[in-house]
Image 1 (spheres, one colour):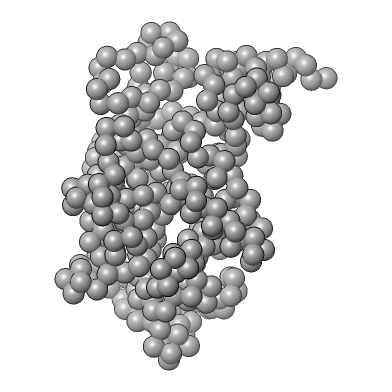
Image 2: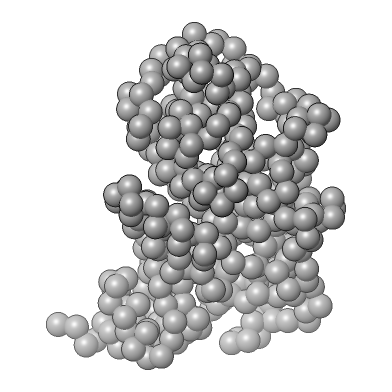
Length: 367
Protein backbone atom coordinates (compact mmCIF):
# COMPACT_ATOMS: atom_id res chain seq x y z
CA UNK A 1 0.00 0.00 0.00
CA UNK A 2 1.00 3.61 -0.49
CA UNK A 3 -0.34 6.66 1.37
CA UNK A 4 1.41 9.95 0.87
CA UNK A 5 5.14 9.18 0.98
CA UNK A 6 4.61 6.04 3.05
CA UNK A 7 4.85 2.55 1.60
CA UNK A 8 3.71 -0.29 3.87
CA UNK A 9 2.14 -3.72 4.14
CA UNK A 10 -1.17 -4.35 5.92
CA UNK A 11 -1.24 -8.13 6.60
CA UNK A 12 -3.07 -8.60 9.94
CA UNK A 13 -2.61 -5.00 11.18
CA UNK A 14 -5.47 -2.51 11.35
CA UNK A 15 -5.65 0.01 8.53
CA UNK A 16 -8.63 2.12 7.42
CA UNK A 17 -7.94 3.86 4.09
CA UNK A 18 -11.04 6.06 4.52
CA UNK A 19 -9.30 7.78 7.43
CA UNK A 20 -6.47 9.15 5.30
CA UNK A 21 -7.83 12.71 5.61
CA UNK A 22 -7.53 12.40 9.41
CA UNK A 23 -3.87 11.47 9.06
CA UNK A 24 -3.37 14.23 6.47
CA UNK A 25 -4.49 16.85 9.00
CA UNK A 26 -2.28 15.33 11.68
CA UNK A 27 0.74 15.50 9.38
CA UNK A 28 -0.02 19.12 8.46
CA UNK A 29 -0.44 20.19 12.10
CA UNK A 30 2.78 18.39 13.08
CA UNK A 31 4.62 20.10 10.22
CA UNK A 32 3.50 23.53 11.41
CA UNK A 33 4.67 22.66 14.92
CA UNK A 34 8.09 21.54 13.69
CA UNK A 35 8.45 24.73 11.65
CA UNK A 36 7.59 26.77 14.77
CA UNK A 37 9.83 24.98 17.24
CA UNK A 38 12.45 23.06 15.25
CA UNK A 39 11.54 19.90 17.17
CA UNK A 40 9.13 17.00 16.74
CA UNK A 41 9.20 13.97 19.02
CA UNK A 42 6.05 11.89 18.59
CA UNK A 43 4.19 9.14 20.40
CA UNK A 44 2.04 7.19 17.94
CA UNK A 45 0.14 5.35 20.64
CA UNK A 46 -2.00 2.99 18.54
CA UNK A 47 0.02 2.69 15.38
CA UNK A 48 -1.53 -0.32 13.60
CA UNK A 49 0.40 -0.71 10.33
CA UNK A 50 2.72 2.13 11.28
CA UNK A 51 1.45 4.39 8.50
CA UNK A 52 1.13 7.38 10.85
CA UNK A 53 4.66 6.85 12.12
CA UNK A 54 5.99 6.70 8.57
CA UNK A 55 4.15 9.85 7.53
CA UNK A 56 5.16 11.84 10.63
CA UNK A 57 8.74 10.97 9.78
CA UNK A 58 8.75 11.31 5.99
CA UNK A 59 6.35 14.26 5.66
CA UNK A 60 6.38 16.16 8.97
CA UNK A 61 10.11 15.66 9.57
CA UNK A 62 9.83 14.08 13.03
CA UNK A 63 13.31 13.28 14.33
CA UNK A 64 12.14 10.49 16.65
CA UNK A 65 8.91 8.51 17.10
CA UNK A 66 7.71 6.01 19.67
CA UNK A 67 5.47 3.64 17.70
CA UNK A 68 3.28 1.55 19.97
CA UNK A 69 0.42 -0.87 19.53
CA UNK A 70 -1.42 -2.97 22.08
CA UNK A 71 -1.53 -6.01 19.79
CA UNK A 72 1.75 -8.00 19.79
CA UNK A 73 0.43 -10.23 16.99
CA UNK A 74 1.21 -7.51 14.44
CA UNK A 75 4.92 -7.44 15.37
CA UNK A 76 6.20 -8.98 12.07
CA UNK A 77 4.34 -6.57 9.78
CA UNK A 78 4.98 -3.48 11.93
CA UNK A 79 8.70 -4.16 12.21
CA UNK A 80 8.86 -4.78 8.46
CA UNK A 81 7.11 -1.49 7.71
CA UNK A 82 9.30 0.48 10.12
CA UNK A 83 12.54 -1.36 9.40
CA UNK A 84 14.33 1.55 7.74
CA UNK A 85 13.40 4.01 10.49
CA UNK A 86 14.48 1.48 13.10
CA UNK A 87 17.87 0.97 11.44
CA UNK A 88 18.37 4.74 11.45
CA UNK A 89 17.55 4.95 15.16
CA UNK A 90 14.51 7.14 14.52
CA UNK A 91 11.85 4.88 15.99
CA UNK A 92 11.19 2.81 19.09
CA UNK A 93 8.61 0.00 18.69
CA UNK A 94 6.65 -1.43 21.62
CA UNK A 95 3.50 -3.52 22.20
CA UNK A 96 1.96 -2.20 25.39
CA UNK A 97 -1.00 -0.27 26.72
CA UNK A 98 -0.43 3.32 25.67
CA UNK A 99 -1.20 4.68 29.14
CA UNK A 100 1.77 2.76 30.59
CA UNK A 101 4.05 4.58 28.16
CA UNK A 102 2.50 7.94 28.95
CA UNK A 103 2.89 7.50 32.71
CA UNK A 104 6.48 6.31 32.35
CA UNK A 105 7.34 9.27 30.13
CA UNK A 106 5.93 11.63 32.75
CA UNK A 107 7.91 9.92 35.51
CA UNK A 108 11.13 10.39 33.51
CA UNK A 109 10.13 13.99 32.58
CA UNK A 110 10.60 12.84 28.98
CA UNK A 111 7.78 14.77 27.33
CA UNK A 112 6.48 14.40 23.76
CA UNK A 113 5.90 17.21 21.28
CA UNK A 114 2.94 15.31 19.82
CA UNK A 115 0.87 12.54 21.39
CA UNK A 116 -1.44 10.81 18.88
CA UNK A 117 -3.92 8.36 20.39
CA UNK A 118 -6.27 6.91 17.77
CA UNK A 119 -8.53 5.32 20.36
CA UNK A 120 -11.59 3.11 19.87
CA UNK A 121 -14.67 3.82 21.97
CA UNK A 122 -14.81 6.34 24.80
CA UNK A 123 -11.53 8.24 25.35
CA UNK A 124 -11.91 9.20 29.01
CA UNK A 125 -9.13 6.96 30.34
CA UNK A 126 -6.56 8.64 28.07
CA UNK A 127 -7.18 12.27 29.00
CA UNK A 128 -5.02 12.57 32.12
CA UNK A 129 -2.12 10.40 30.84
CA UNK A 130 -1.94 12.42 27.60
CA UNK A 131 -1.89 15.71 29.48
CA UNK A 132 0.95 14.76 31.81
CA UNK A 133 3.17 13.31 29.05
CA UNK A 134 2.86 16.22 26.59
CA UNK A 135 5.30 19.11 26.57
CA UNK A 136 3.84 22.55 27.42
CA UNK A 137 3.04 24.01 24.01
CA UNK A 138 2.93 20.52 22.52
CA UNK A 139 0.08 18.89 20.60
CA UNK A 140 -2.42 16.17 21.48
CA UNK A 141 -4.45 14.36 18.81
CA UNK A 142 -7.28 12.28 20.26
CA UNK A 143 -10.04 10.12 18.79
CA UNK A 144 -13.45 9.12 20.11
CA UNK A 145 -15.77 6.64 18.40
CA UNK A 146 -18.29 6.85 21.24
CA UNK A 147 -21.08 8.23 19.05
CA UNK A 148 -24.09 7.00 21.01
CA UNK A 149 -23.06 8.73 24.21
CA UNK A 150 -21.90 11.90 22.47
CA UNK A 151 -25.12 12.32 20.48
CA UNK A 152 -27.49 11.85 23.40
CA UNK A 153 -28.58 8.27 22.79
CA UNK A 154 -27.01 7.07 26.03
CA UNK A 155 -26.92 10.08 28.38
CA UNK A 156 -25.95 8.06 31.44
CA UNK A 157 -22.77 6.93 29.66
CA UNK A 158 -22.07 10.50 28.61
CA UNK A 159 -21.90 11.36 32.33
CA UNK A 160 -19.26 8.68 32.79
CA UNK A 161 -17.26 9.49 29.66
CA UNK A 162 -17.50 13.28 29.46
CA UNK A 163 -18.81 14.49 32.84
CA UNK A 164 -21.78 15.91 30.93
CA UNK A 165 -25.38 14.98 30.18
CA UNK A 166 -25.92 14.72 26.43
CA UNK A 167 -29.30 15.01 24.70
CA UNK A 168 -30.24 14.21 21.12
CA UNK A 169 -30.94 16.92 18.51
CA UNK A 170 -30.14 17.58 14.81
CA UNK A 171 -26.71 19.17 15.51
CA UNK A 172 -25.59 16.41 17.88
CA UNK A 173 -22.44 15.53 15.91
CA UNK A 174 -21.00 18.98 16.61
CA UNK A 175 -22.03 18.41 20.22
CA UNK A 176 -19.82 15.28 20.23
CA UNK A 177 -16.76 17.36 19.37
CA UNK A 178 -17.62 19.93 22.02
CA UNK A 179 -18.17 17.32 24.72
CA UNK A 180 -14.75 15.83 24.00
CA UNK A 181 -13.08 19.24 24.05
CA UNK A 182 -14.92 20.12 27.24
CA UNK A 183 -13.83 16.95 29.00
CA UNK A 184 -10.18 17.53 28.09
CA UNK A 185 -10.44 21.21 28.99
CA UNK A 186 -11.89 20.36 32.40
CA UNK A 187 -9.21 17.71 33.04
CA UNK A 188 -6.44 20.16 32.15
CA UNK A 189 -7.93 22.88 34.38
CA UNK A 190 -7.77 20.48 37.32
CA UNK A 191 -4.01 20.36 36.69
CA UNK A 192 -3.84 24.18 36.48
CA UNK A 193 -3.22 23.90 32.74
CA UNK A 194 -5.30 24.60 29.65
CA UNK A 195 -5.84 23.44 26.10
CA UNK A 196 -6.19 25.51 22.94
CA UNK A 197 -8.17 23.78 20.17
CA UNK A 198 -6.24 23.63 16.89
CA UNK A 199 -9.07 21.89 15.05
CA UNK A 200 -11.99 19.58 15.76
CA UNK A 201 -12.94 17.10 13.05
CA UNK A 202 -15.99 14.88 12.62
CA UNK A 203 -15.27 12.28 9.96
CA UNK A 204 -16.67 8.83 9.28
CA UNK A 205 -18.69 8.70 12.51
CA UNK A 206 -15.58 9.46 14.57
CA UNK A 207 -14.60 12.56 16.56
CA UNK A 208 -11.03 13.86 16.33
CA UNK A 209 -9.59 16.83 18.22
CA UNK A 210 -6.13 18.37 17.88
CA UNK A 211 -5.24 20.68 20.77
CA UNK A 212 -2.21 22.51 22.09
CA UNK A 213 -1.30 22.26 25.78
CA UNK A 214 -1.08 25.64 27.51
CA UNK A 215 0.45 26.58 30.84
CA UNK A 216 -2.53 28.85 31.48
CA UNK A 217 -6.01 27.66 32.46
CA UNK A 218 -8.41 28.31 29.57
CA UNK A 219 -11.69 27.07 31.05
CA UNK A 220 -14.16 29.69 32.28
CA UNK A 221 -17.91 30.21 32.58
CA UNK A 222 -18.09 31.87 29.15
CA UNK A 223 -16.53 29.07 27.06
CA UNK A 224 -17.68 26.08 29.12
CA UNK A 225 -21.44 25.85 29.52
CA UNK A 226 -24.63 24.44 28.06
CA UNK A 227 -26.46 24.20 24.75
CA UNK A 228 -30.22 24.47 24.84
CA UNK A 229 -32.47 23.04 22.13
CA UNK A 230 -36.20 23.61 21.70
CA UNK A 231 -37.87 20.50 20.28
CA UNK A 232 -40.99 22.57 19.61
CA UNK A 233 -39.51 25.21 17.28
CA UNK A 234 -36.07 23.74 16.54
CA UNK A 235 -34.09 26.74 17.83
CA UNK A 236 -30.81 26.59 19.78
CA UNK A 237 -29.38 28.78 22.51
CA UNK A 238 -26.10 28.82 24.40
CA UNK A 239 -26.56 29.06 28.17
CA UNK A 240 -24.09 30.07 30.85
CA UNK A 241 -24.06 28.56 34.33
CA UNK A 242 -25.70 31.72 35.72
CA UNK A 243 -28.73 31.24 33.43
CA UNK A 244 -29.47 27.63 34.36
CA UNK A 245 -33.08 27.09 35.39
CA UNK A 246 -34.08 30.62 34.40
CA UNK A 247 -34.26 30.44 30.61
CA UNK A 248 -36.88 29.13 28.19
CA UNK A 249 -36.98 29.34 24.40
CA UNK A 250 -37.11 32.98 23.31
CA UNK A 251 -39.56 32.21 20.51
CA UNK A 252 -42.28 30.13 22.13
CA UNK A 253 -41.50 30.09 25.87
CA UNK A 254 -41.10 26.30 25.94
CA UNK A 255 -38.51 24.74 28.26
CA UNK A 256 -35.16 24.06 26.59
CA UNK A 257 -33.59 20.61 26.47
CA UNK A 258 -30.06 21.11 27.79
CA UNK A 259 -26.79 19.36 26.98
CA UNK A 260 -23.67 20.07 28.96
CA UNK A 261 -21.46 21.26 30.26
CA UNK A 262 -19.31 21.35 27.14
CA UNK A 263 -16.90 23.57 25.22
CA UNK A 264 -18.71 26.56 23.68
CA UNK A 265 -15.65 28.37 22.28
CA UNK A 266 -14.24 28.08 18.78
CA UNK A 267 -13.58 24.61 17.40
CA UNK A 268 -10.57 25.75 15.36
CA UNK A 269 -7.60 28.12 15.57
CA UNK A 270 -7.66 30.39 12.52
CA UNK A 271 -3.95 31.23 12.31
CA UNK A 272 -2.90 27.61 12.76
CA UNK A 273 -5.36 26.35 10.14
CA UNK A 274 -4.20 28.99 7.67
CA UNK A 275 -0.61 27.78 8.07
CA UNK A 276 -1.76 24.19 7.56
CA UNK A 277 -3.68 25.35 4.49
CA UNK A 278 -0.58 27.06 3.10
CA UNK A 279 1.43 23.85 3.40
CA UNK A 280 -1.38 21.78 1.86
CA UNK A 281 -1.37 24.11 -1.14
CA UNK A 282 2.42 23.82 -1.45
CA UNK A 283 2.05 20.04 -1.46
CA UNK A 284 -0.98 20.15 -3.79
CA UNK A 285 -3.15 18.15 -1.36
CA UNK A 286 -6.57 18.74 -2.91
CA UNK A 287 -8.89 17.15 -0.33
CA UNK A 288 -7.21 18.70 2.73
CA UNK A 289 -7.30 22.10 1.01
CA UNK A 290 -11.08 21.89 0.54
CA UNK A 291 -11.65 20.63 4.08
CA UNK A 292 -9.42 23.25 5.70
CA UNK A 293 -11.11 26.06 3.76
CA UNK A 294 -14.47 24.84 5.06
CA UNK A 295 -13.15 24.62 8.63
CA UNK A 296 -11.71 28.14 8.47
CA UNK A 297 -15.15 29.35 7.39
CA UNK A 298 -16.78 27.71 10.44
CA UNK A 299 -14.82 29.77 12.97
CA UNK A 300 -16.72 32.36 15.03
CA UNK A 301 -20.16 30.84 14.37
CA UNK A 302 -22.58 29.64 17.08
CA UNK A 303 -22.00 26.13 18.54
CA UNK A 304 -24.62 24.39 16.37
CA UNK A 305 -25.87 24.14 12.79
CA UNK A 306 -29.17 23.78 10.91
CA UNK A 307 -29.56 20.80 8.59
CA UNK A 308 -31.26 21.42 5.26
CA UNK A 309 -33.53 18.47 6.04
CA UNK A 310 -34.69 20.14 9.26
CA UNK A 311 -35.26 23.46 7.46
CA UNK A 312 -37.37 21.69 4.85
CA UNK A 313 -39.33 19.62 7.39
CA UNK A 314 -40.15 22.50 9.71
CA UNK A 315 -40.89 24.90 6.86
CA UNK A 316 -42.90 22.31 4.92
CA UNK A 317 -40.98 23.16 1.77
CA UNK A 318 -38.66 21.47 -0.67
CA UNK A 319 -35.15 21.14 0.70
CA UNK A 320 -33.23 24.20 -0.55
CA UNK A 321 -29.87 23.97 -2.28
CA UNK A 322 -27.14 24.71 0.23
CA UNK A 323 -25.12 27.17 -1.85
CA UNK A 324 -28.24 29.12 -2.87
CA UNK A 325 -29.50 29.36 0.71
CA UNK A 326 -26.12 30.53 2.03
CA UNK A 327 -25.95 33.20 -0.67
CA UNK A 328 -29.52 34.33 0.06
CA UNK A 329 -28.84 34.58 3.81
CA UNK A 330 -25.72 36.62 3.12
CA UNK A 331 -27.69 38.91 0.78
CA UNK A 332 -30.10 39.54 3.66
CA UNK A 333 -27.17 40.72 5.80
CA UNK A 334 -26.62 37.57 7.83
CA UNK A 335 -23.50 35.48 8.29
CA UNK A 336 -23.80 31.98 6.82
CA UNK A 337 -21.40 29.25 5.78
CA UNK A 338 -21.16 25.51 5.14
CA UNK A 339 -19.91 23.09 7.79
CA UNK A 340 -17.61 20.08 7.44
CA UNK A 341 -19.60 18.25 10.13
CA UNK A 342 -22.65 17.74 7.93
CA UNK A 343 -22.42 18.33 4.15
CA UNK A 344 -26.18 18.94 4.09
CA UNK A 345 -26.23 21.66 6.74
CA UNK A 346 -25.32 25.29 7.25
CA UNK A 347 -24.02 27.46 10.05
CA UNK A 348 -25.58 30.88 10.39
CA UNK A 349 -26.22 33.66 12.87
CA UNK A 350 -29.89 33.95 11.87
CA UNK A 351 -32.66 32.34 13.97
CA UNK A 352 -34.19 29.21 12.45
CA UNK A 353 -37.59 30.85 11.85
CA UNK A 354 -35.99 33.62 9.79
CA UNK A 355 -33.84 31.05 8.00
CA UNK A 356 -36.99 29.13 7.03
CA UNK A 357 -38.65 32.35 5.86
CA UNK A 358 -35.72 33.18 3.60
CA UNK A 359 -35.61 29.57 2.35
CA UNK A 360 -39.31 29.84 1.49
CA UNK A 361 -38.73 33.07 -0.45
CA UNK A 362 -35.92 31.34 -2.29
CA UNK A 363 -38.13 28.36 -3.08
CA UNK A 364 -40.98 30.47 -4.51
CA UNK A 365 -38.60 32.61 -6.59
CA UNK A 366 -37.03 29.64 -8.35
CA UNK A 367 -38.66 28.25 -11.49
